[in-house]
Length: 568
Image 1 (cartoon, rainbow, N blue to C red):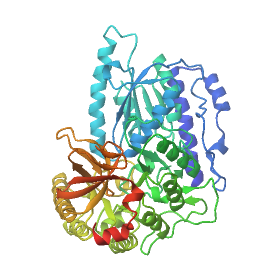
Image 2: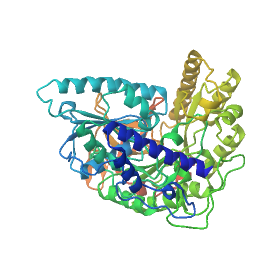
Image 3: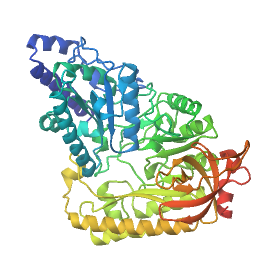
């Protein structure tokens, strides 16, 4: 099987070389010479016993010429769609381009290059991007007819949609100049330079070892007090509905040392909150530091589609080291898979005051039959036992989830099981979606998308209604309690101060001077403030600010469990 997979990679390489020759009209002899200089079969065969190389340089791609035009000083405009991973990927791209002399602009009329970071997880996300491309095509055509026509606009499609729809993007969108997948961002300067001669530059090869570990992302908003750090890329779970393994490849993790260094850098820059990102963060495994550890022990009723993995530092090790960098920096992590929550992870979350007591447990469905078709590796009962274990380990913990309605073959009875699960668990935060079938997934090949759109919409509305009702109940129970709030900014419409509590729920309060170590002063972004909750809506808490504080001071008198029990 491994040979077949890598044989396909070699075939893709040869095809890409052939396509490049066809577009550039290069002589056959030139193509043969370049293929001789290219990777041999051994580069396409992975030895799993070896520690993977940490990439620190742009890849050498023989079918792309080296004598390319310098494109520095060109202004780049970023369009970002999709998840937090895409925001972090954009910061990686900007770091790479900035080092090559590119400049960034937030004004469309000033832009020479538009880079669209895309999402392919659902059809709705892709439709937004197609509409955006229509706009950019018109902008590009207007530039070509203007006085500034000697400085043509270039359009690049990056990320998951670039990998999934590469042929369609090139054939349908004649205005697209660059198509770059999630693992080819190092090659962007050269790909952009190739477009200067009128070529369409494409690099969507997936990597087994690219993590951008050595690239320090440059934040798009330097004033933001929160930041995202990608700790791993790809996914090995192969859920039948999910496109991620096909757009982002296999799981591979950054070295612990590079992540800790980035957290330290962000702390020194004044960042107060960091979110560790990955398609499946709690399956993190740093194999650059071999250990005798096996894969995390799965709870009863959970299983995987892959064999247990041996060696490497795990997510509990990483969380322990990251939370020790700065005790006054909040640590969050997402997304997670329920199978990978060993006691070691829950212990670190409970014991470290700066690790937010909020755990993401994406159920996806409340029906064991649907979960089996989704190939999630667990059933309803196993999931509920995990919820009980998490709540026992971390008293007062907040839970969040992802839910899908209308998956292939979902009956009314199976959907009612999803509603009953939501009713039992009572999530603080939930991301609810109607099912959207994706090409390449197992569900696309094996199942029929047979739930009518009208039924999906009706079920989606019922999930939202139940979720809002439950959130209102949970938030009403917080009235009178004091929350630790990290201030983010000002609500434009009301002028109130806005921040978030441990559960990532918005908390707003009126601006006023409150006590601090320096005397009375107003709250500003990056401050921790003790806020007493006085009213609640399903998505926002309103409070009265009491005092400036720190994480350590706020939790000094009571542990998290004691605070939860006393409802302070």
